Each structure stands twice: as C-alpha cells, then as structure tokens.
Length: 168
Image 1 (cartoon, rainbow, N blue to C red):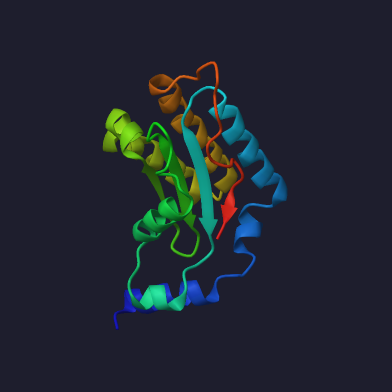
Image 2: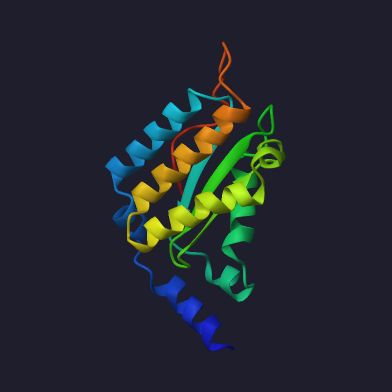
C-alpha cells in the first residue's frame, strides 16, 4: 500500500462524525436551501447540494474517487431526471477536501468544462480559507446565473427536485 493510500484511509477513518455539522450547522444549511430556492425562482433548472464527511472503508479500498461518488449521488438524487435535462449537483466530500459539480447534459452543453472549472476554482479558493458556506453559496449563485441565461423562468415554474441540502 502506498503512503498516499494510507493517508487517505486514515483521513476517512478518523474524521469527526460531526464534521458536516461543524462546517455546515443548521442555520448554514437553511441559508443554502433558501439560496437554491431563490435561484430556482429565476430559471427552470434544478440545483442540489450534497455533502458527505467520509466514504465507507470498502470504498477507500476500491479507490473510489470523489468524482465517482458524485456520479452515484447524482443518480441517487435523480438530478439527471429533470424534464429539460438541466439539473446540477454540487457534491462535497470533506475527508478528501474534494468536491465536484456535475451537470446534466442539457445544461452542460451550454456551460461546458471551462464554465464549470471557473466556478470550481473560485469555490476551491473559498474552501481553502474554511469558508465552506460562502463557497457553496457562490457556486449556487454562479450556477443559477448560467441556468437563468439558458433556461429562464417560465410562467409555470415547477420545482422538480427538493431544495433541501442532503447530508450523506
């Protein structure tokens, strides 16, 4: 086993069980939920936020990355199942200090990798400063701007997915 693998294993095993609550207390989660709701009032897209403190030890041995886990969560939360294929997931894995923004094919074709990367770079800088809530709120705002540009709100704006953040 490599040193890198052992470090990752210990990070996942030793992370505080309340790590999510430390970084995202109830009030923070309420503000994130409110930001998603406000954003979705300006477009027909769907934004989800999911945060996980660590992966199961078996996933570490299988070398599951944050990206692979984000794809699983994207599916589990049905972010791919929107009428206009315009769902977006922000997934944060605290133990790995890693996060992913995954977008359904409808919105991804408009924003592209360059657009997502620009959002990610700014969020990552905020996370490095321990500004987790601010980073997520920034991501929601920027994603919302893209969605509003390509999928503006219509007369009957249906909320297809819950706005409440998910703790895994």
